[in-house]
Image (cartoon, rainbow, N blue to C red; front, side):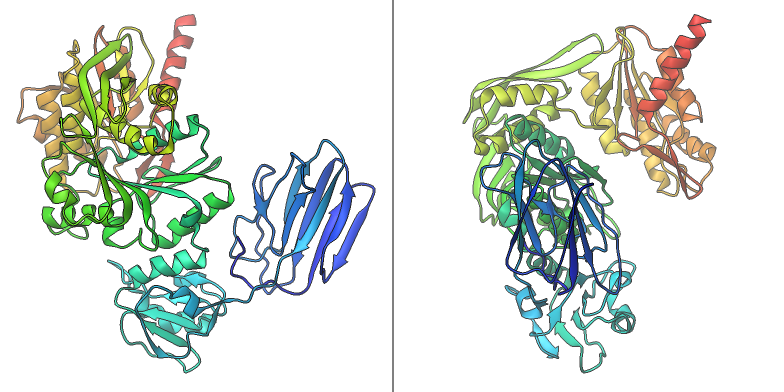
Length: 605
């Protein structure tokens, strides 16, 4: 896909090795260069700014102005793409190793004019308050700090910051087009476009800006109160096992090829969603599976395209409060928007709110669950387990029929796997591939079992509120452990009620609670522990308090008894501890390894 960026007319292309160097300026038509071995391709572009972008040798690469490919029939065919595709690069290097002589054809692409505002606004209702929609745009920006000459700036009204207040600043930096919700003052040479909702507009503008990449992918969106993260990884595992290349956008990270990008929101801003889609499409992904939060739907982050498949796992009261949803009805309304933004909707038939969830849907509807009315059903479910292992199995009935076993405990794991199967069925994945992939599917920090002993089971889970902790501990109780041991702490600078509630849940459901530190932030860890103890005091539950988290984990391991299930709750996938405004490295998996190594060293002395 060509970028919507004007390519400068002056550039220098070098194809070189130790023996020869070829230089050409003002390339036109095409040229052919024979070469053996390693080719170094360097593109220099004269521009006012000189950002540097480097590529991995394994990266699919599209170099501005050129498509570089071997002669037809060469099995080593590669395409090229600059990672920071919306900025001109001062220097880019890519190394391509060839086993035999090959000809590389260098085709300058047609020089593209900057995108016009009218092109970006296709499909939107708007009013041009001043200027012209024929105005040309170099970049689309919603962060005032990233504005360049001839940028289009979208004024986003956030909970804390209102982009309209930065209009004078972005105009000074060179912005020539503004997308606004309210009247603003701007020089006559600045185009001002008024829309009803700038977030909604940004989704469509971003999709156009990146060349509508969703059309090049099969898109899968998963929403619901619980199960989104686990299900996205299950789907990714199954499809990859079947030979598909899958991108992922979720709570933990975004995955594009071998690149893992830490997530800040479950569903990123629409601009970032489209940018990820573009990178995935250019990297050769066949499809993308993403978590879709209620906030993401409410703030129109998934507008600008239609999901091929939209999944609704379940809904329970959550995310209700300031800067979230005013009540449960609003929460449900936002969640169910997904079924009006997808072609095929796949819904949990067992959810008590099923009829309300599907109300007003515009998609082809499919269902899953235990209900006899479900299109995909789980029957004869039973728990399985062994030394250091917990799982569940069932018989799949309906649209597909075969036995399923998952190395993740709990009834909710059945729902997650049914969701994954319901999606992957549309990709014609074989029964064998589904069974194999479900068996090995794991999600970091989601009932993640860590083998430390044959005598007891140890796991890490992200449960960091009372509802999640109660669900987890209730599930584990069903496996009838000798003891259920729960270690957790609570985050600082958060509602004290969460501490009381989690303390009460653990005191009621666990045989032993180990109270420790989580992310104290700007509070004293001991003060947080004292609040948790207030909740536990409402129960008869036994507890110990060990402020240092590593020492608390060591205590749990050293005091594990045969048949115990030990849960390290709260941190999950997080690999840091936040103290006094600073994040310190702390991964519970690393801590466990250190503890076991230290135990071994002491035993050998």
